[in-house]
Image (cartoon, rainbow, N blue to C red; front, side):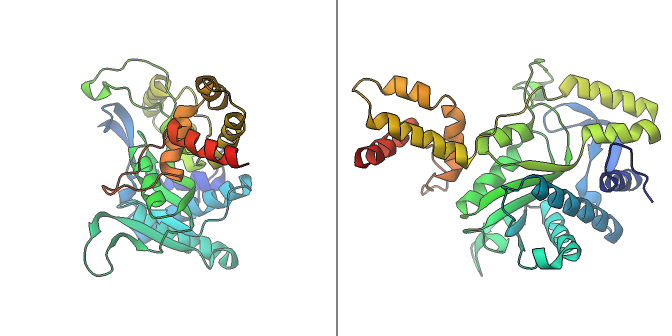
Length: 322
């Protein structure tokens, strides 16, 4: 039985020790998609036996329950969504474990996942399982580094009419976003936020993880190779995220648009630039949120940019009629 570190909850310790014993977490030198040379590698695809799948499902379930308890404003999800491919078994197994822990609470929650390619026959579409339209969706994935897959998932859920209320990953690497030339082996040394922090900032979606790189290092200090610990600490010192993105969610969007409506209704001609500067100091983040939350789908399947002009037109219309 796993012995929990004094500062790490028992379910996290059990999860990390399962990862280590099954070589889901391995140590060496690994080239990541970003071009970085990582001293460790996490492969959720190795959770392919019943005991290991049960271990990760239990860890996700405890993480989700803790996440919802700590964030009472987050609605209980209607759907657990697993992005293809690794997220599919994770979502299914986690929902089963949540139902085992609390059948009454989770009895009416469904699971869903996406296809990499849209099916053009049979039931068709790109979603398998529960429809997402009008549903609160909690997304489960294995690990996030650059955040590209997470953004794609958020946009896909929005196109299907769902609302992502949370994003849970197995391991938060806690490292900064890759620089523009890292794939060429050039590290500019600039401070950046983490991928999870930027997702929180851009989309206002709260995130949770079973464990972090810090948890892993703490566990290894008592049980792992001293050399592995030193290499991971050096990696963390070099790539650790320096800050997190500011949360910009639907509430922030509503407040910003309401401020805009009030100012435009009282505006004099020629004051538009000043109004935008004072009402929308984070217009870039607001615009990115609008891409998902209020964008209408174009014929080519892309969610269009909802720019300042559209906001002004809507605000002016509402303000004039108020």
